[in-house]
Image (cartoon, rainbow, N blue to C red; front, side, top):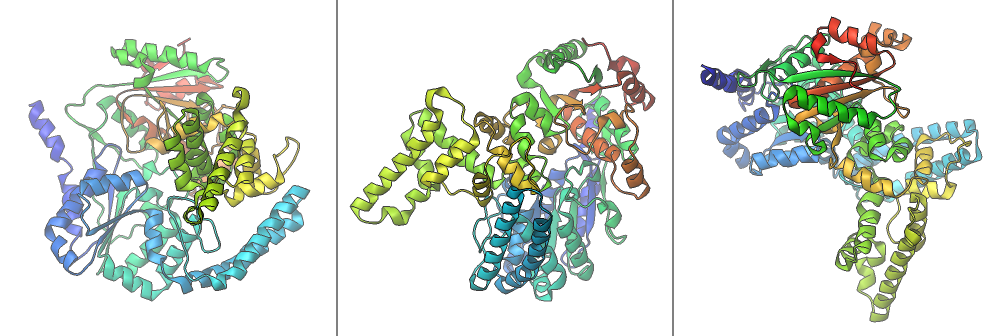
Amino acid sequence: MTGARTKNDDTFDAGADEVVQACLSLEAPKSFFLYAGAGSGKTRSLKDALEEILKTVGPELARHRRQVGVITFTNAARDEILRRVSHAPIFHVATIHSFAWTLIEGRTGDIRAWLLAKIPDDLAEKKDKLTRARTDNSKANYSRDIAGLEARFTALKAVRKFTYNPNGDNIGTDALSHDEVIKMASAFLMSKEALQRIVLARYPFLLIDESQDTMKELMDALLVFEGLYRDRFALGLFGDTMQRIYPQGKPDLAAAIPETWARPEKQMNHRSRERIIRLANAVRQETDGGSQRARADKEGGYAIAYILPASTPDKLTAEMAICADMADRTGDADWTDPETVKKLTVERHMAAERLGFAPLFAAIDPVTELKTGFKDGTLGPLRLFTERILPLVEAQNAGNQFAAMAILRAHSPLLDKSELQGTKPTAQATMTAVRDAVTSLMSCFKSGTDPCCGELLSAVAEKKLFAVPDALTKALALGRLAEDENDDDARSAAWRRFLTVQFSEISIYRQYAADETRFGTHQGVKGLEFPRVMVIADDNDLRFKGAASYEKLFGAKPASANDKKNAAEGKDTAFDRTRRLLYVTCTRAEESLALVIYSDDPAAVRQTLIDKKWFTTEEVDTDIN
């Protein structure tokens, strides 16, 4: 009987996939939003849809040189989808920034006109801030920004071709920023009929993975485009609004979907055991009432809540005790092996504190414009350290001159090909300059010291060992930010604080950004799964800067006036954001889950968890110590 039920589980959501595939018709395209909760097999549905397209209309698309556009949120997701469809050329699979660039690349006149219209607005904003600046450093910083904008405005007329790298730094007058590319693509798609015709001719279908986190500007533009060409184009959205974790996503996406769209839904959760799914359904109930069902072969499972005082002095020891208790409760000895337990935090600041890069986190993350790049390791100024300086230092320390030379050839302006193709004396002088620059860098580590990033940056800049991004050049010129000093420009202040960070933190941060530690966050693990998961909720961490609050969600603190105002206006509140974070992290667990809550009022939290029927009294432990 169980075998039959399990087989039925495999096909339970087949109807949703059939609806998606029926929408992808060249004769009668129909847009859709596929609701696919945690563990539902959303990526498989996307892959199956692409395989069906390849089989049914692939030859016709190839004949007319048309493609199916597929937008992913990360490079890793892009690579996985390409692998699943064997890199078939009828599929254009790209990240959101790469896709946006394909829309505007080569439109030099339109790009120039957009920048010529926008830069004066940026200048006016900077000049206004300059008049209100309170410190000499802030005034110098704004003056430098103004000079840069004025120089760029003047140079725009001579730019023959604009450039953009979606995966790296964009430096120079002809280079566009990530934000500019998204804004331009969105504006052009809504306003330029010629571009609309090109997109329509190229893409009969455009499918978006993790659509709930797609930038609001571009999503709005795509919805407008779909409305204009509804009978000739299908926009397919794959996602789950409960798993929206990035602030740039469209918050009202579900409400913005037109009535004419298909809305297939997947109800199975193939990942987690039944107890974990029951918790996830209960958490979700207050948001949209959505629920999932467990597989017949995924009965049982464990979800235990541990509530500790926020003042717990040694949290790591407490968490080790919790792991031991989980091993006893579940009969799973692997809970006592730190390498087999995935610890998830509500925010990265908690992982930073535990792993040892809290000062680096505190310097950069509070600045909204730097958050996304800091999360995924793509922030340009930091990549100078993680992808150039750190690998070179590691190669030198290991005595690996081959690896060191490979890094220098790839990234150092001192080894530009034009320098090496000169006369023999010139080439020799170049190599002497390289050796001198490397020696200067490594001298920062004399006597086994741990230099600050500013010291290394000075050595790199002085010898021109690597190109230094403008943000760091400015920070170096202004100097480190003193504790009693203000800098009205948040980004400038962030990079000046960064100069004081110890270089040893760079290695830890690089490992964390690459998900090579036992800690993860809701941002980094969406779509992933682990047998044993510990979710750590700790609002009272000294470095907590987030807009979420487990203390509010669990009844230890009341709603703020701003929460009440936002709720009345239908906007996101701390309760909404925290509920989504809890859902995303808890649904990573396959077999067993420990929810560790640090609170100023453990009794109130315990009562809330039981009253909401999220946990039974036997599943709540307030005496682990």
